[in-house]
Image (cartoon, rainbow, N blue to C red):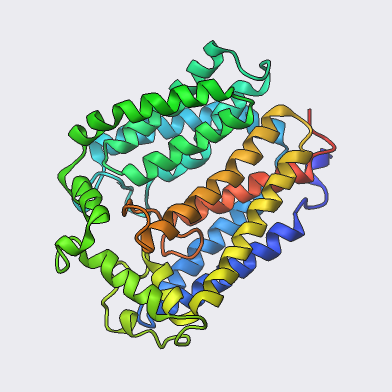
Length: 359
């Protein structure tokens, strides 16, 4: 019997931390949804699917995952193209509706892109040569542009970040990173021209939300009020006035951190941030102990990408960053993102559990 079919290879530290986040997330979702048990049940089912997928992936050796990687990437690109033609959504084309299931192919690329970049760099000399860097950038640029066109700028930036992290961990030289930063800065005026009007409004609102307090600025103003009103220890579970009176927009998805802040205060937010930090630290520890280049790059990239999710959502809710539609990992309501995140943790468990058997 193959060694990977034997004793389950789970990382107990990751598992305990994930259970803590998931349980706390369901408590917050119950309050944010207005005590909607049906919504909590649906999210529980999705999380259950994600956990099963995570446990299954954790048993697959990293070298087998590498064999699957190009297929996963190609399937993801095909689904993005299908979303371009057949996608549905409110003013966007982000979802594929297959009748029985409805999902966002862009979420798959948060996992497929770092896997593909790590796959490409696995057998190459590091730090990567200029040619290898250009190919890796092309690998991440294609899905990034397809996702940005949906339009979904937030997910596009996260997908791009996951690929850039993989390159950074591969030892990309600072002068190359600075050069890429200069190119991105020079492209900002072009990006402004191709952005949708609602995306431009988000930038304007970020710069001056009080200019339109009852319109575009409403979301961020109400979010900051909720965050501030929670104080040190919060108003208590189910006692948030901003949430109960429905002042907070998208309170069960993008702005669920505002609900959490109001009800559990600074102590609750810091507790959740501590668990996130421990998850990221554990992922980086797994990366540092991986026995091959591809696994090390992939584990590090997945861990740092989680950091970006938390940073962007927290900055968005507190008004430090523009609103770009990034969910709070495993707390916000959503199926595809939760399942993808848990599969990513399954990959981390696979790298850790099979570190003695990696080829």
